[in-house]
Image (cartoon, rainbow, N blue to C red; front, side):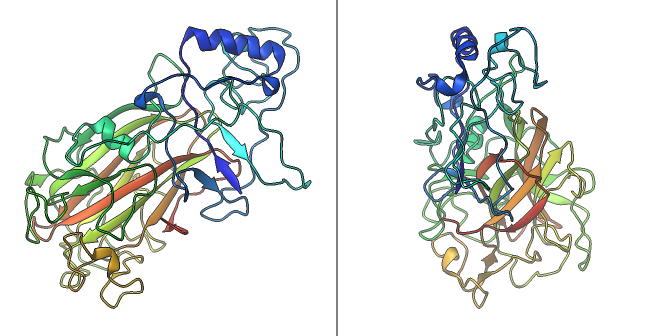
Length: 415
């Protein structure tokens, strides 16, 4: 099995000085401790069964391909100011292996525990040049409250932990904010919730919390702010992003949205990343009365710049191009649905009358070091009734080599 380990960002000039020393000695032979940092400085939590990011080298949606070449020992440094591997970092700037473009202070840690094609487990490496090999950062969403409306904590709830700044070149979250569908600021409301589980049968996929967005109330049914009905309004009419609502090719089109709420994050990808992924679930009161009608609420994940194959930047849709709504191919949590109704118990949605999807995973490509904007948005379509809720969790960077294609499919063995 191949595990993706995310490490702490550097700690300033002290780390740069250590990195220069590491470069001179050969980084694979240098031990040490992770850089210090608070919750905002930690590497992202993960979506594997034990809280770690896991990639399957066999390929498929849960396996992007073979690992990158890694970062073995570096040779003598001929010129500390030369960027021999053209990764944008010099030995003087902290690159501990200037012969490998996958190793530098802007990279993310990758731990390989399974043998390669030669039958040997590759030697461990310090991809991010922080002086520690295969160091694992803890989750960063412990202790967050359900009602928290700080967008930085919303990012942490989906396991986006590492924080970057425009002045440095390390990877992480550059900014986060709650927005309406058109990107304008969203006022505080119970449309956002940070859950430690959604009812007794739906669990977090990374760390201790997941993010819930709702066109009604993102609250458990026994909470004081819960809706206690199938329809509650927070924001009223909204302005959709260009090209949305996305028309379902088999159903009547819709022209306007209501109660739109989203989390927007601006990210810098690790220099050795080839993609990223996240998990989500969608629930709605619109099942079964409003299947394939112009009232079908939608969840969209918009990426800027838009990757190839997306619909106006939307990353999450099924193989037929249908957006995430009651009509998506993976709508299979309900009474008499393939997965039954147990994942509706205790959520506020009725196990007998409402429905949702299983855990789905969206995967998308990215260029190493690229800055991207992701906007996760949920909205009522055509009216402000029959609310819907989207759960988002388990974001992780893919840095194990291979080619990452845009795809949404059922998650394999979710928690």
